[in-house]
Amino acid sequence: MTIADHIKELHQELDPKGVQLVAVSKFHPVEKLIEAYEAGQRIFGESRVQELVAKRPNLPADTRWHFIGHLQTNKVKQIIGNVELIESVDTIHLLDIIDEESAKKGVITKVLMQLHVAQEETKYGFSVDELLDYFATRQFEKLKATHICGVMGMASNTDDTDRIRCDFTAIKNTFDKILALCPDLRGFDIVSMGMSDDYEIAIDCGSNLVRIGTDIFGQREY
Image (cartoon, rainbow, N blue to C red):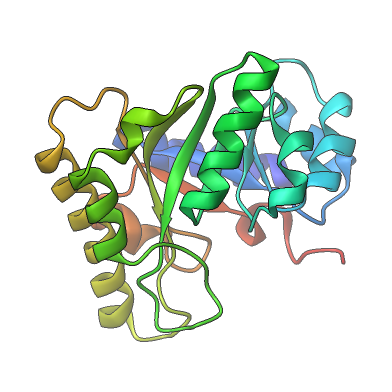
């Protein structure tokens, strides 16, 4: 199957369910992104600031870029204004810097709060308790130029589907609890979870945005 075939097949599967597709294009050449764009894909996910900034001018203006990797604080300036959504805010310190740099540039930056529920210590993100405390104490009210749009998370890297389902359920339950704590939140409506190997389980558990790379582009070209 071609990249275009994969894109069309995924859209046929996801669009009726109201699930958005982020084509994870990191480490893939611009030519492959253009092929996906021409097949109707508009949202692309990159995990390195330098790569995103280099690719962005080569795609049409209506391309929507999501930053999905671990964002270092010293790279925040470069990314502000270049993305539709930063999916991977994993500390309050990073959020504060994004807010500060966004205010300086006169833009509103949309972000997701990254939850860490997986068994691997290597993954980044807030614990469930940390994130619930952040919203319970309404610390988001001090943000001047950042809009929190929802949560993002990954399941444990395992073949155990029960464990994967448990992780995704924990992420969705945390999202629901945040809305219960702060019913006045506006535009807090994204649950980003699920990748090539587990997106179907993620959708069953309430994901409305999936990040798929290998199923579209094949193995990454490092």
